[in-house]
Image 1 (cartoon, one colour):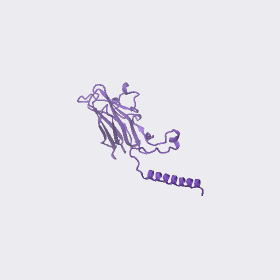
Image 2: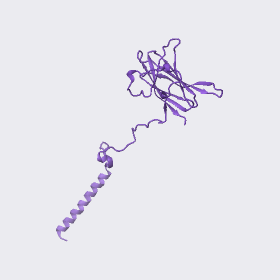
Image 3: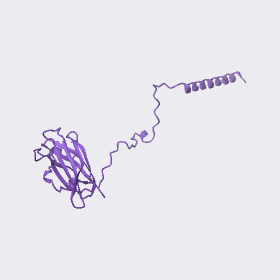
Image 4: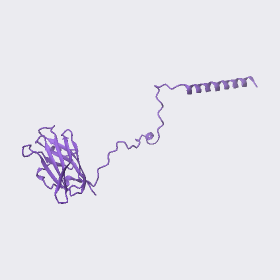
Amino acid sequence: MRKAEKIGLWLGIVTLVVSSTIAIGAWQWPRDPDTPAAPPERTGAAASGRPAPTTAGVAPAAGNPNSTYLADLGPQSGGANLAALPRALKGKAGYDHPIVVQCPTNQSDDKVRTVTYLLRGRYLDLAATVRPYYTGQPDARTFVTAVSGVRERDGTLTRRTSGTQFAATMASPAPLTAAVDGVEELTLQVQCESPEGVVVLADASLTPAG
């Protein structure tokens, strides 16, 4: 073997040994904890700049499409206690399908206003949002009671409280729910801390029994 060939072979061996040593050292040396890891390779929608599909934040589905709004039934009695939606509330979100009850004067003979609806046992549940509106005392509270009348075998009505809402204010509307299965008629009783206002039951809906 010529001298030049020997020198070339020796250089090749040295280069191979040095490269292997560096590779082993890099594998054994711990990563600096402050060094961020390389980002993963992006594929599909992310790589193309389009947002990836997700189910988070999807709006809830609409309620039962077969629900009946109490406002569409028309009152059996107490219609004189109903009022129009105040102009200041018209067009505002959260006041759909309203039942608007005038507050009582709070005189000794006018503490409660009532409105009664005939259900004939056709529904299971009532759900509404109580949204009072006061012109003179914005922080006044509202008291709403749902009273169910159940027809007995002898034809008489047995009345019982099936739902209450004693905390609603203008700043904090609150839900009213009541079980009305087998109920012949439903009476809404409204009391107000201030007589200068109305009580709005928004989206008052009934779940059908069948």
